[in-house]
Image (tube, rainbow, N blue to C red; front, side, top):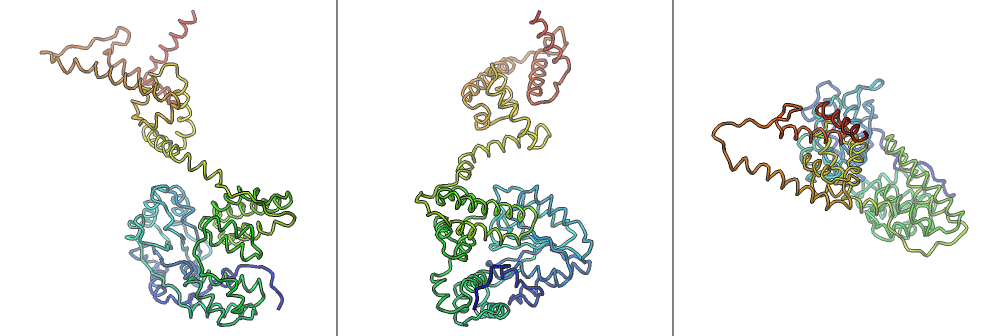
Amino acid sequence: MRRRTRSLPWVIKYRPKRIDDVANQDQAKKAIIPWIKKWLSGQPPDKKAALLYGPPGVGKTSLIEAIANEYDLELLELNASDYRRRSDIERIVGVAAKRRSLFKKGIIILLDEVDGINPREDAGGIEALINIIKETRNPIVMTANDPWKDQLKPLRDHCLLVEFKPLSMTVIVGVLERICEAEGVYCEREALRYIAEQSQGDLRAAINDLQAVAEGYGKVTIGIVREVLRYRREKTIDIWRTLNEIYYARAAWQAKRAVTQSEKDYEELLAWLNDNTPKKLVHPGDLYRAMDALSRATLFLSRAKYGGHWSLLSYVFDLMGPGVAFARQEGEIGKARYSYPERIRLLAQTRQVREVRERLAELLASRLLVSKATVKREIIPLLIAVFRHASDPTRPAEIALSYGFTEEMIAYLAGTRKREILRAIEKLKKARAEEAAPARKTEPAEPVKAARTPATGKPRGEEKETRRTATLDWFLGGSPSGSGSSRGRGSRRRSRKR
């Protein structure tokens, strides 16, 4: 039998179109379908979101897509691990939760991999989701492999929990048989049982393995399957083995499997390939073809992420795996060792600095009533210039004291002048303590009027504090407290010129 050309991935081609096409999962269907029907009746259920959980490849996403197709609903599918920041969730999910469909009976919002939201790096993401769920006009469905993570506890209280069981070997074999019949591929039942056993209940993985064998050899026999899948299927492959299987692959399915089973996410794996491909493919022609494949993979991945076109991931896998593997046509593979990606190394080294900058931006944004982006773009560069280049360290010390900067923030702003400014801060604290000490020691029998300055008529201490505040506001881009202080500075400059 002739070998078939690579076309649409079978996991997409044979995705269930109707609810009855979803293999097994009868208990999950009994829980989710009545919940959907309440939305369609115009009386939303008490819990306006559903959380589908279970191992990968058991039909969580497929069931929702089948429900949307069968009930004529518009499906908005997002990956929560990519749209996980509070701003992204409010901008995309928040808007979709309140709009109506123009051409369908309703809208379903599907958030895949919600357990990928990081409680530290994506602070506020879960809270934003909960607020949207309370006010949504459309059903929100989320999927997770592990719903019992601590960060998901507040979310679970607002969701209908629906469990998906691992698929049995009999169910997986039945699906594989139907695909082979539809594709006209000769297959042995024993070979299909072996594929199902190696998949460990993951139907998506079993279909990918079936397609790899069928397209690579034109038939599916136990001998071929045992040779191809001679080891027990691993859920993930470490990065060193991933790179080896890509660069030394002899068949397209081997390179693609290395990509799909890698322990690294797509963006991180792209960074590894970008940095190590020039070391392994040393011939200019080979390197050109490989880097062209990687650039196209980057383009498709960005369209999948930011446009929500997740079917493009298949092309990403093809370009990162077979695209790089079969770029080598003229030269040999280089002997250089794999190196850690420079971009990831720099991000790891600067992580602490970026965290300090983030805390500084939050502090200043709350005090100055502007956004953190404005603080980072306009105010922090000005502060760095003041802290590092001011001739008198007293001024940056006054700013640090007034705004409550921590020692880490001062180190970030001052650089090599950190110690000098810290000493100036200690002097200011000591001077202020000495000024306040006499007032505490002596308690006059009757109130004593504070000495006032002839020019302003204000008490001397109050005038000093007003002048200090005006100086800080000027450094941070605001207007001084009083116009007199600015005129005073101008007149002093004119007097010096004379």
